[in-house]
Image 1 (cartoon, rainbow, N blue to C red):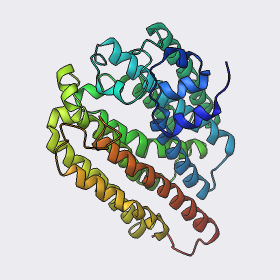
Image 2 (cartoon, rainbow, N blue to C red):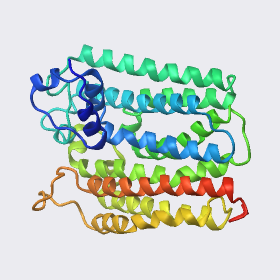
Image 3 (cartoon, rainbow, N blue to C red):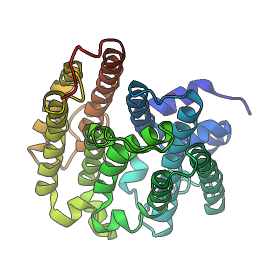
Length: 347
């Protein structure tokens, strides 16, 4: 088996479609894991960890080894959840009959690339590695009660996001919490060795814009596949409140992401004005907002490459630029706080 580094890069940058089991079997272990866990999307976990790591560095808490371990652990946990998500939906019959999920990427179970037993083995190996990273964090922070609580919360989310949360209209809110305030607090507190400080609340609030941006992708996807979910009994938020209301919730999430950054710059002055660089993603945000004003088309528009994704496609397009600018902004902001602390004093 030849290691395919090129495929690693592709799997981290875009969702891979593959129909040949022979081609699948020829892939190395890492390529299979990256593709099966949809790492082009799970890479948002790495983005969140980098941002939180920078905030910890700015406060004098950064260390490379725990940062690498907690980031890798959370990335593995995200992938583990996706493996469980596919296993659960496949076992419940949700992913049958050309369901939305199998139209945009490889689904090893539906396509016969893996058996259910093999999927479970991948889940357990991936989950064990993620769990081990969590145990390291417990020891590193001397079993801080905050880290114990966050660790327990993470385990519960991995196990119970797919069912029942996604089925009772709470999955989208969970996505916002996890990839926003929870990840930012978790990484920051691990690097701070579990010591609480007054900055934690601003760190949590700093995670809100990114969490909203990630949730907008998830909510957009659930709007895109609302009719399929209705037929299969998956009670996502759009199924519960209807397409129009879900579109307006998504619009509010995108707008609130930018307003939160403005608040953090000018009220507590937690961020310096350099964070306003995220507004360069405003053109993509306006495009997503414009698309969300109208119902999803019943047929793919001419030359639209991402069908059946529609709202999720525009949200993903926005998130990629927004996340990049957010990371760049926090990096420059951190450097200013460290080397020019009087440039924009905290309020």
